[in-house]
Image 1 (tube, rainbow, N blue to C red):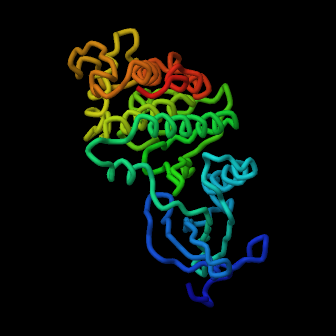
Image 2 (tube, rainbow, N blue to C red; image 1 turned 30 degrees about the vertical axis):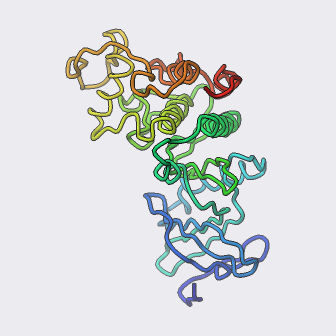
Image 3 (cartoon, rainbow, N blue to C red; image 1 turned 45 degrees about the vertical axis):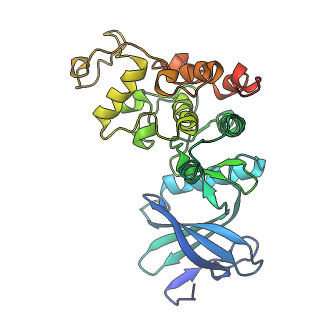
Length: 312
């Protein structure tokens, strides 16, 4: 990345420069920035760069950007084994008044989506699924204990190290919360989105447990549990498992009528994936409860019999 006179660059806290990182290729793009595989030209290490270009508003840097950086710094201080490591934050002002922020993360060669896609026909071993599920829920429990909801858990946002350990990444939609807060923004990729979010209802940290259950199921089945094609189709697929909500359960504040969905009786996750043992079936059945108050916390999930038994 060459020096450009139109950029007013700021050195990072340790004296590092933006030019210290050589972009190699794009890893992914999204609404919240582009991620590159890059080389740290000082150390020679491969890193992941997230570049976010944002327009300054009358108050300066938008709150959403400040929130992500603040969350990342807060998480980084704890150095948790199941949260991706942030190395540096760099920012510089461009001539057009836009701000470029560069986040430098540890680089992991694959995400969980890649891992699932490359599985042999025999699938992932039960002991690997159990270990990765434990690491996912351990990371989620850590986030929730710091009052952070990730809000976009999906296989693409779960990185897997060369040693086979899982780390949660991409906190672009993460949000801090308190017990009184009602979160209603539509977030989370469609296939992993909890029903209360689809129905535009207040939600809490249990949305991450719903997403985590969908991800754990996908490790067993090698394909998504609810691959919806629209929000209505997504809900209908969910009701195939949970059953259509009762009149009492159906939100009164939305225009979509309950009668728009066919009558369905509840099923078990095992009905959709015979590979599930009785323990994994029971855990996922609890995590995929339509009633958010019935979903266990990540900490309670980690104490489930599924994690104390030898994989079947």
